[in-house]
Length: 86
Length: 164
Image (cartoon, rainbow over all chains, first blue to last red; front, side, top):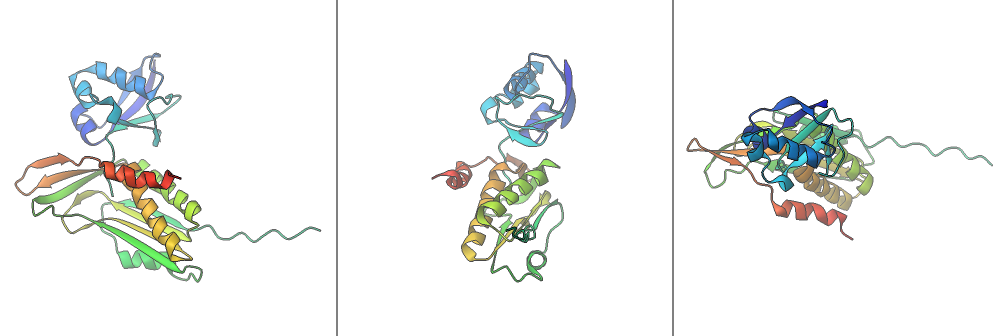
């Protein structure tokens, strides 16, 4: 097990119900995609927020990554919807 | 025979700010170009909040503090290199934005106009699709219409920079 800080934005944050949290990850969680699958098992709010996995964007230590990216020694992992700034 | 090293030109200045407050477009152009005699073209893009046919009360702009600045800076640095810009400024607001208010400012400076037009366009296309900001619409009837959906057209606009 290892601990990471997770941060959520926009409707991902609203559906999960918190903006950030410290979560212990089992060793089976290797990639960003594994993390999303793991979080979906944590309850209905998570399952609803992450239902459409392919639209969820992931940033590791504030840099965009694909879902097959290994989490490595990430300190902060962010999950959020496609961006709509500008 | 040893030749003297080429003089290093000063790095093109990049200014990135993410802030709640409004900004002064003329002052930002002046800050970028004052005292410079190498700049021949300055292109400015301003993004404003539309009223959506009178229905919109305000936009609420959420951002990822830290990453928003870092991502915009990465985009500007890429534009400086790719278009050989003489400087770039990008300012993006967050929080409540009323119809008619400014949301974003991009300024690109170069020796000639085409690089400045392209640089500003490139920065905006990537800013819209890669900078971590999200818009939520609040309507005049007091309801929240919800989060604005990302548009395929924005991805298409971005992708033209990576095609042949």
